[in-house]
Length: 140
Length: 140
Image (spheres, rainbow over the protein chains, first blue to last red):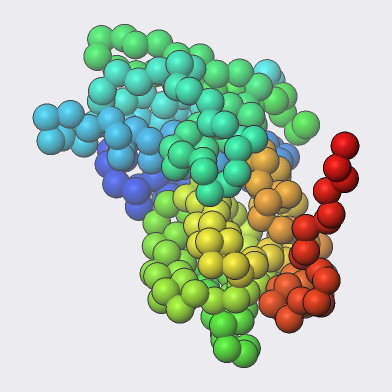
């Protein structure tokens, strides 16, 4: 069984949700633990919706490409978009200690991804944002 | 998989909302719409039954924060009953467990809300003649 998959043409929130479900099915079939599968699926939705909602420039939704690989080192998720430059590693952390109603709206999704992932990398290359997220070793 | 919502006003200003399925970047709109009508009436309590909720992203989490903030602003209370482990984890990461009122069962959540309501009633009861009088200052 091929342990990699690529999804392209992701432009709407519905696409993001569909990608999340496809990724879940793909990882389930490869016996990845439910915890890791849940974490990857959540990251797919959070990162994709960020790119689709905020990455647009000149009135154009960015092209988004998702690559997923199940390796001995864990599940590797790579998301590339040609939208506005955005480095998730430099995004401010939400203040989780203030009262819920005082919290700013943004930042929760990225905080979830940063907490669930083993590592996150970012590079800007030829006008593309490339975010690589690794989730724990297989079956752990 | 979509989101199934059931909402019931069990007595005036007391709502029970149960969620089944996925609360994500697209399905959250169903709950958002429901809250538009429920919260306008300044309810006293809202109890969510999360038993059937299998997936929640940050957009979903925001709906519970919205409910809690709105209720707190008008002296009401909210409780969340029986989230599955993967849902509880999202609350934990967002450090939202203490302020959202998350309980292991519907019964526990209802007991908590009954307690809150009793305290509210006691607060509104006429004060004892001497209660609330400033204590006599000692003149040194």
